[in-house]
Image (cartoon, rainbow, N blue to C red):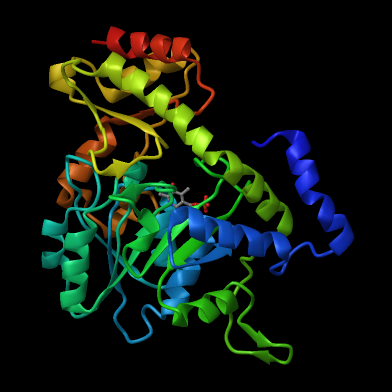
Length: 361
Ligand SMILES: *Cc1c(COP(=O)(O)O)cnc(C)c1O
């Protein structure tokens, strides 16, 4: 959170303007600042990341030509799969790479049918997908690529922002993310034709004062959320720098423990240190992910089983899917744990957490 006084100062204008939502000054300012910060051509703000994802599917007209299959990863948060299903599309689950847990491009092609309309990969933990291979496949089959970049705020590859790949990328500004607007989200995109459509889909399909073109919903970001974003954006580099110190301590302490795998980004990646995933190999480590989770819990440390279960194993989906067809994702869901990660996490606490983890061997 920003300093209390800083936020109060930022929202003072709103008592003069009386403009609380519908694209006011704060909204405009945040949009411009984010476009710059993320290094993307265009950006549209939303009430949350999930609505942003649903809106981009609507604005692109996915499914309208009868092609309704979307190739995606089951190793993700509920939102990715739900957005596809809620827009009347059919998720087709593709396995992931063991190295960084992003979608495996080598397994995409065999899932493509004449009904495939898009690929929705996830930059999970801020690990960038193999964007070049994905683009090549999408281009040769005429598919849209929409990235779930909820974890990838500020991530860059060779100086290129995560949001500049694919046809569009969704960012989440939820309170738990590296950068937050309390609740919020955005779509980054390059096609100018999408600007008006996204704006219309997020505001009831309204085209003008007396004209409504289609049944859009309401997913606008309000001025108070935008003001929170303006404040937080001033401090986000410092936030990431502090997270880096925390991450490096974790890596230093956990590196080399047999059966424990870290997920360090490659050299050409500017990382955001959003999460601290570790993967346990039961045989080599000698204890399960759940054993470590329970041991941490007993010490009052709240780790998360991100992501377990796979979305294809949710009660609402499992009857229609067979998660044994994505064995690497299945194994990752059973062996991954994300450890506490935030800028103000004290290094002594990191040490204590690492002692508990290492102690389970
Ligand atoms: C947080 C998150 C979302 C949804 O974002 P909200 O802003 O909470 O709606 C989508 N996908 C992933 C992978 C996320 O972590």
